Image 1 (cartoon, rainbow, N blue to C red):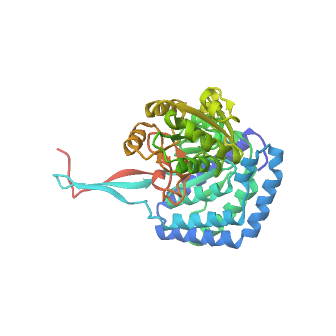
Image 2 (image 1 turned 30 degrees about the horizontal axis):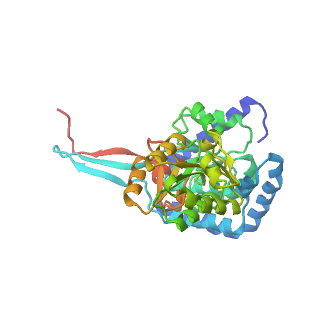
Image 3 (image 1 turned 30 degrees about the vertical axis):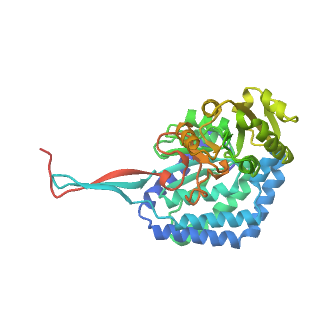
Length: 424
């Protein structure tokens, strides 16, 4: 859509929101079988249209340099045949999940004969603002519709062609399966002012979910007139306890940091118990350096790892999303927990230890949406947790926390069955 003035943009956003609101009402009558059929059909079309998808994605990748994207950001943007297959597989996994809509969560019979049911229901309309990852377009649409919600997708301009190609496939499959028109809509303007207009439509949009840089998320949280599910940053830690297995410590640290650096559950900080720093830190440091990672550490780290650079206090709160990691040596488990709770972002923290008591204390006291014991931070993911896919990872404590799948995109209402009872 061309930007024909502020009023035209405002009207466009209003029309999109109204269509979504109407679609959400119609989705209440769509069966779980229809939603699954839509997802299966979409997955098949993704495979069949892989050439067209690749061509659309090539346009986005070719334009990436002009947007100033880093190498890690371009990697997140790129659609390989393996990633297209992974997107299709994620849709199949969501299709296989039980339909949450209408599920009775609790039921009781009151002394007066009233049957009180607590029933799972959709949130309504989701406004989803996200970064340049085409797979997220399909994941978000699948999760929202499966959970009975209409979704307005505001993807990054960097992935505009790829996202449009994916949504075209979803729309085609939706028509075949009887999914209401407007259940999945991709915002067609790159004008950033559109976000503000959508955020001012609480009468049509029930929840906003921003997924991207901290600046975007803070803007949405400040401007939204509806509830927001969010996380601001992913400063994730790996803590190597004094009872850590050395081989496991090296393997998990490298995986958490290096397996995919440009994502929110990649490790950005390493904390090492002083009792094992002298024996363990040089080994872990060497493995990280060989993987191309720059180490920024405290005085003891710099003494034990010659290539390490002195860290600033800001380094310990930074989400690098690239080949840099901060390192701090601590005197105790208690000091490690205090450091993580002070510098972390309540996203994902991991402990490597053979001491069960230490693991339990870490899990209980670390304030985070997910705690990993002897496992990589990279597992904090909806697919890896068995949710089929995720629309984001929440560090909030109300309504949803951690990976948000279909259940986190629902609420509940009470339905009461009586036989003519009146209150005395």
